[in-house]
Amino acid sequence: MQFICDIQWSGYVESVICVERQTSVFSTKEKIYKDRSEVAVYIANHKVNAMQSSGLIRKHWYIENKDHHVRDVTLREDESRIRVNPENMSTIRSFALNVLRKNNIENIKGELYGNSLDLYGLYSYKQFI
Image 1: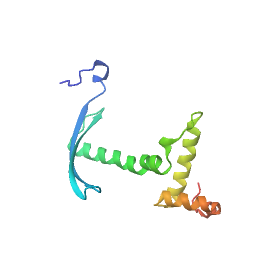
Image 2: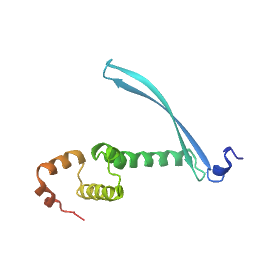
Image 3: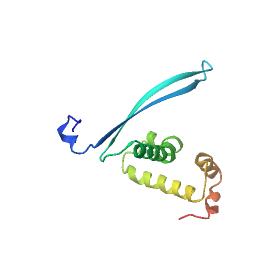
Image 4: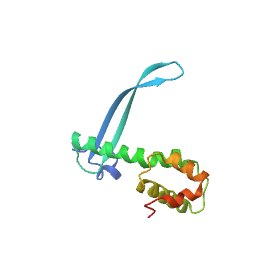
C-alpha cells in the first residue's frame, strides 16, 4: 500500500510518524499557564513501530538539544556572517565543544565566558585532545 503521492519520493519513504503534543506554557506577561498544541511529522526510510519511533524521536531531540541548541544559542552559529570557507569556523567550534565536553563541562556558556577573561585557563584542561 502506497500513501506517498510524489513519485520521486515514494520509493524512499516507508513510515510517516505523526506526534501530537499538548503542553502548558507559562506566560510571564499574563502570569498564567496557556495550553498549547502542536503536531510534528517525522519521516523514516524504513518501517518502524510506535516503540521504535518513540526512541528515535527522543534520540533526535537529544542531539538537537545537546549540540545544535548549544551551537545556535551559545556559539551564535546562526548569526555568523562568515561567507568564505565557513566550514573552517565550524570545525573550530566543534573542536572547542569537544574539548569542553571531554573535560565534563556542563555550563558551556559560563566556561567560554571564564576563558575569555583568563586565557591561561585553557591550559588547565586535563583532556585537551
